[in-house]
Length: 193
Ligand SMILES: [Fe+2]
Image (tube, rainbow, N blue to C red; front, side, top):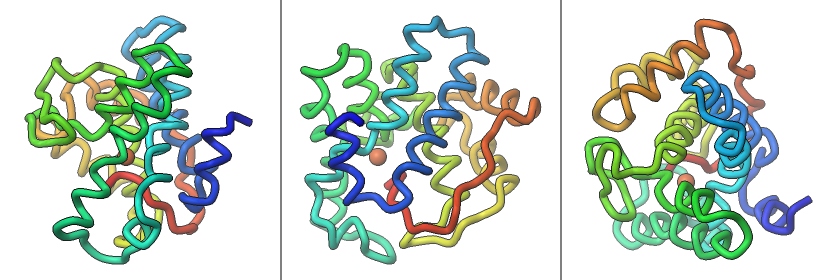
């Protein structure tokens, strides 16, 4: 196992389930969008390692039930940059950039840079949707698990604001052909914030 993944095991509960479901959804969406095998392979890695930077975030912040405020939020929002720094010398740059930008929003209201639309690398736009789907359908310290239909509706509603509409369209095609993995167990995970 990659040492980076091993390092994450202590930080994110249900890590194995979460990261592999994110990878699986991201890969299905990437295939639906006609990406080549090199990008599909990158999506597999980014799905697994997108939150690796959380090993440098205070565990008390990671596990906090309820909203993050002030410095807690600032600390949490450093994890994409930590993840970039941890992966840039190990994988090709498209992988580490997708990790860096996996919380950017299509409307420019995301972090760390507030990139907008197609300024955000496509692989990051895909992982954002996959991560959101798994976060909504899994139990979190700050929210109960919701049904897949609820997550699909949320993602559809936020196409064009949080999510790239083209990626959402591909995601909905994946849903229609029944290619999503079932939601994970009720372990508390820490994705998507
Ligand atoms: Fe993240």
